[in-house]
Length: 505
Image 1 (cartoon, rainbow, N blue to C red):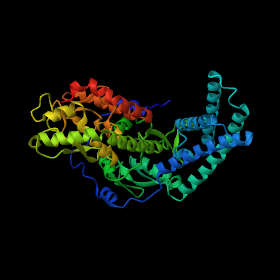
Image 2 (cartoon, rainbow, N blue to C red):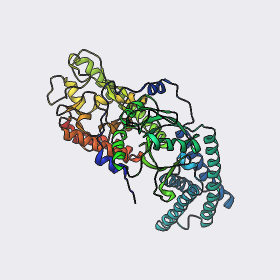
Image 3 (cartoon, rainbow, N blue to C red):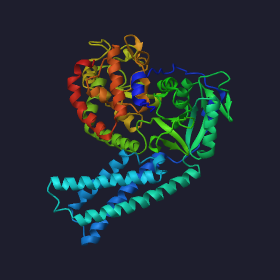
Image 4 (tube, one colour):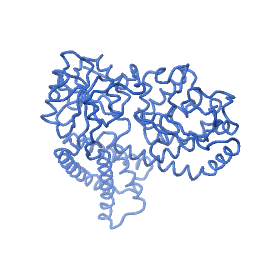
């Protein structure tokens, strides 16, 4: 059986390169698409978030209603039980990938997975009641009633949700901006399939293909070839792209890997079309774009409702930190002003999400006439450019605290890969030249602290090995992100500052 693990393929084979300043020369058709206004559609994040919240509220309300009907009131003991069970159901349904717009379109498969998750919740409740000897405190009649009522509720709710999503799809309100990788007859067959069953799902922008001979004409079924595969990196950074569909046969593993090496750096969903394959898999092996069967190659690292969770986490932590740390920040500002002339803050452009430039704030730690806005020269031990106050605040990372403002502005996260200066080098090589797949770090928003920092990879990156270790840790964080991992990193950051002080100059 054909098997391709895209994550392992990328970890083993990624060798993408970021475009140099100016980027590739995009075609006139590509420039026209970039210049055109983006059609407004419904946000998948909002839909998934609302659907998830409504489902949780209905399940919790059903639990309360069943007990109230059973005995006339709900004891306070049942409040955490109901809330805990509802939260667990939400987690399990998410783990089953049933809170995605594409999943809402499914029929029996959606119902089966949701009910399996709901059943597992009650199995776990009964096990916990037995282990903690609380079986007498929890009514079995109530549990059975809530379980059965929940089944009816979930079936009805999911069918209504499916009908609503299908209606929005038919109205074209859920279209995703899509490009095709490939050309010629294969792409023509794919476009015909999309036209016959997925036109309400997809806003097709054009094609990208490395071939320039007669096998890949400039126009396929009315859609222009916008450039080569490498050009898609620049294109997607200048205009929104939600989905990339690869029109290549399953046997073309080498070409697929080459494509992944180039596109893995982008925060987009990548799907391999199965419309040409002579092989037939079980329905569970496919996901669908409209009626088009596809294989999932890569997903956006943080998407849908998780984006909302992370946004709320960032804002709460940033506001709390600003309040608690304001005395330290005020004292630092006064010390900087008293020691040397110049501004209190230092601004530096760095690469942010999807390689966009953001202006980061820091407390100035160098003499004004010696500041290095591009970081073309790494700061070393006893660097004469650094002030006495600067040495202290760099050792303790106090100089980074103004980046809380960047978090509130939405340019940074509290946790994420640390953004590096544009001209930062390791062994006289720019970071993206030294490390294969470096810009894959930018598929998520950069952070004030990260997995690499709490694992000792903070401070000077003068060797290729050091920057490789950072990148490896950043990629691990992206692939394994969770809100609990963010919380753990925040808690461990102050601890790690003491053990990593020797690396910070």
